[in-house]
Each structure stands twice: as structure tokens, then as C-alpha cells.
Length: 357
Image (cartoon, rainbow, N blue to C red; front, side):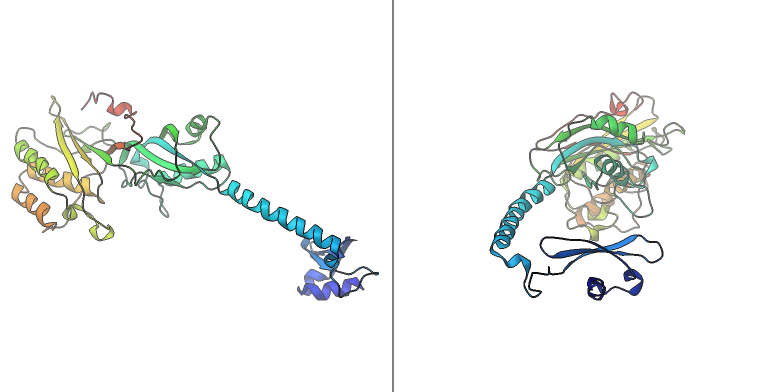
């Protein structure tokens, strides 16, 4: 008579209850039932149904006896005391900073995005495979498509202390366009790779003669060193630290909470061969497309297509009277990031002496 009771109790469609397996009755009066699929014969659902013993009142819960009540209370107390420990152990995370670099020629920027290959997604995928669970990383900033980073920091909350050679595993799995130089354990879970950075440096490289070997790491502009107005460009770079509102030099200013930035310095180097140029920006933060917009207008000033007073007016008013244009992305590098508690030199050979720039 137990079968009809369990079949009626299950409440599942007939195809799941036609074949029923009953297991031994337990001491507390519960009966284990496994429902088989009528076609495949596989166990689909397992339930425990209270079925009283013969010498027991059907309307009495077997756990209501003094001995069983005490036992149940002890079990509940043990579970309650063990639950916080298990939850704390499960939620415990260890924050690590990763010192990295990447060649942006093969990616649509740093940030993960749908239907496009990004640096963030690539690293997250391999870290998740290593630790057998989803790992989310947070970068020190966002770079556009084809933009590089010779020094980049991101942080991740790992499920355990890294007591193995993680660098070796990452070097074996990551593509050659991404390098991890070191991982640094943090003292606090509150230390953030993006919000704690107080200074960022960008370098922009230009080659003035066609060179197929530089096209991926430098932007080609046919600049004539003899006719280029270097004095006007130098004067424009000296204006940048004097102003803080760079709304006129942002691709999408309304998407930012603030367009206030502090450019600490802007320097220009020219090679003796008159074939390459390097421009360096040092500041606390940057807006979307800001460096590339500034570079486009600096080149326009040098070529006589933009006047210095117009450039300064845009800095003063935060308004631009023309369509915003950006310089090529290939020559832009995020080259230095500083923290109050962390500072590393640039590990890229490209910046080691800059022999060809």
C-alpha cells in the first residue's frame, strides 16, 4: 500500500511514476523512493516520504520523542555553528596585483565586450581554468582597440594563496601578445588597481617615413621636420598643465562623471635621424580618447592647420567648434602606472633605452 501513497504524494506526471523503486525504511520513519523514466529506465527523481512504522501513530512525528528531539537540536546547533565557518571559508579571498604588458594589435581593447576579443576576457579565461572557478579581474584603466600597454596592472581576488608557480603556468597558456611579469599579494582586500592609481603615463610614437616593421607599434605621419612648427607645438604642450577641464578633448564627455583631469607634464623628443617622434603625457587620469584627440590637434598645430589661440580657447571653454578627430591608435602606449604602495619600472625591452626612437 505504500506505492499508491507515494505515487499520489509525488504529484509528478504519469511517465515519471509508472516505475517506482522503494528502498529500505529508515529508523525515523522516512521511506526513500526513486522514480524511473519509463523509456530510459534512468533515475529521474529521488524523494524521502514520511511513512510511519507499524507500532507508531501515523499522526505522530517520529522526531517528537525526547531522545530524538535532543538529537535533532544538537544536530541543528552543530549545523548552525558549522555554517558560518563554511561560509567564511567559502567567501575568503586573497587579492593579488598582476604586473603585465600586452600588444593591443590583436584585441579590441582591454575591456571585455560581446562579439569581440579583448585582453580582459583572454586573461580571465585562463585564470578561471587554472583555479577551476570563475575569476574576474579589474584593470587600472581602459585602452582602445589596437592601443598597447607596456606596463599594466590589474587585480584579482583568488580563492587561495598562490603557493605554486603561477607565472610559469600563465606563460604557457597565455598568447605571446600578453605577458605577466609578476604577481604581488596585497595587504588589504580594499586595495584597487584602478581607483588607487594616482599617476598614469602615456607615450605616443610617430615614424615619419614608411616602415612596415613599425606600423604595429608606431603611427605613420609624413611630417617634414624642416617645415613643421616645433615652437607652436611646444607652446601648446606647455598649456596643458595650466587647465583641468578637458571636456573638449573627450570622445564621449557625457558618459563621464567628471571631465576634470590634471596633466602634470607633456614632453616631446625628436630623433637625430629626423624620422621618429615621441610624445609623453603624465597625468592623474584621462578621458575616453583624450590622448589621441590631443595628438591629432598637436600634429595639426605643427602642420599649420590649427592655430594656437583656438587650441587654448578649447582648453578654456571646454567646447570644440569642429568634429572631434583622433590620431591613429597604433602608436599609443600606456607605459607607467604608479600607486602609493606600489611602483615598478617598465619591463618592456621596447622602452629599454628606446634605441630606435
